[in-house]
Length: 217
Ligand SMILES: NC(=O)c1ccc[n+]([C@@H]2O[C@H](COP(=O)([O-])OP(=O)(O)OC[C@H]3O[C@@H](n4cnc5c(N)ncnc54)[C@H](OP(=O)(O)O)[C@@H]3O)[C@@H](O)[C@H]2O)c1
Image 1 (cartoon, rainbow, N blue to C red):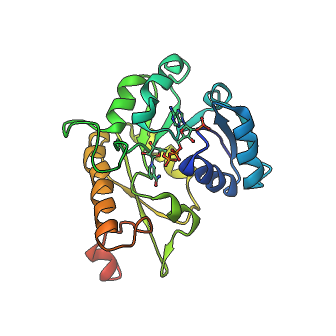
Image 2: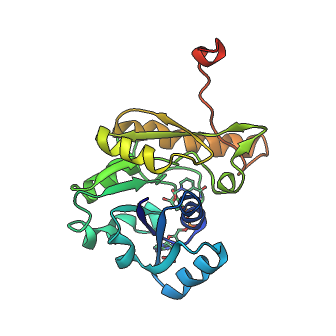
């Protein structure tokens, strides 16, 4: 079992803390305000979720910052760049603007690549980008779990991530290199628009349908 440091006690941070804890991992749930982390850990009610600071969370061998780029994720990471060297970094960012109508980054980059630039020594794996927070509460859509597209340049890091999430109620799909996060993140932007158009937001997700599965291969 691993220890995972989560930074941020918002919608994703708390739910992912619960999801990793349910698999038996220890989670250091970090907040800018320790009292908030304590409250969040108490609400989760798992003994293996330990409240703390961002500093304590960064000490874990696996880190998962659950902070928006627009709220200063890159600036928050800057003082930790050296300490994150060699660590598995799970990047879940979608670079949304304040009203979620668009991204704050141009087409030629992604949140994942911005994070990798900010912490060049970390082994960045992008994941959970298309999983809306409410779906973490109830992952099944009529018996069909959501796909989580996983991107990374470091294959060993990708494998390590996949072993950490083994048992989560999602299907994890290898979506290739880190730069593919440009597409994966923009799929979330489209998903948001589809959800609004069809009045199902925020309960929506993606499933990659493949012919081999259909043929029973
Ligand atoms: N919401 C989704 O459905 C979803 C889905 C996939 C990916 N994501 C990604 O997950 C990340 C977190 O999203 P979220 O929806 O969990 O966000 P959120 O509910 O707004 O929580 C973000 C957390 O970031 C921390 N934070 C640090 N600096 C902050 C600042 N200046 N202003 C506000 N909060 C600050 C806060 O935690 P503390 O106060 O405890 O420090 C806050 O609770 C984002 O990168 C987002 O793109 C979100």
